[in-house]
Length: 268
Image 1 (cartoon, rainbow, N blue to C red):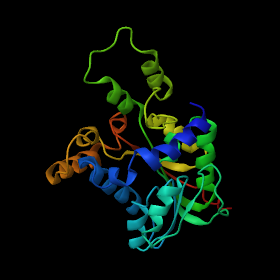
Image 2 (cartoon, one colour):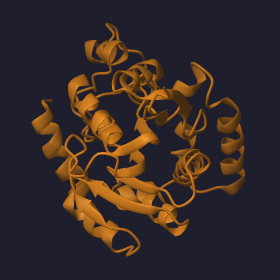
Image 3 (cartoon, one colour):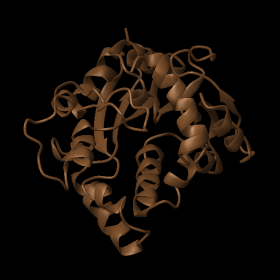
Image 4 (cartoon, one colour):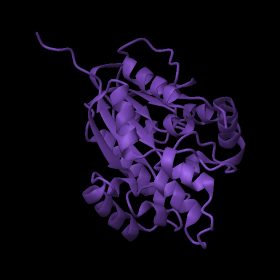
């Protein structure tokens, strides 16, 4: 799909088809795993009372606890219905906006969260626009957190549990080779990453000190199929905390997170 079709698909999908709020709260055992990991990966790094812009922040699932922890949060999302739900929290402002063109001045925030835009943007140029916009509005030495969907887990979702087709579908090969989403799915995906590609995009956007972490880790794919279970949640958290930074292992996750810093001024 071209980007205009994806943009229209985003509006329809998140307004009429899929409940993103439920996905991050009650839909499966994976919900709590993703939520806890995002909050700890962000919360363990940013300073107290940080100014945070949550770009693609949906209904405010991550913005609300950050605001409750004392951070000054502003949420931006392209879907009006999701922004309206985010506004109901009442603890942070939420507005409609596009990750590729933010209205904020340079150096307006200490932290930018980019959880969603990158896997909805088809071209490297658009993804770099979003990353550069996030970096632009963050102060020198500030934090940018960006999420991506690994192409290998998406391939597993469509290919496992069935006989391998012969010949192997060209669309599956293209997914693995270039990150092009398989046509025909409901989810309006634009691109699916490898960890190395995600790191390259952050570097190209000018970010430094980049870390890469699995959010859910190897157990996330399984927990999406199960109801909430505290014992499984704690086991999955232990596993991802110990292995989520390891090369290759970090791609075996439902979502990847890249963490970078905006360049600090050089000291004469």
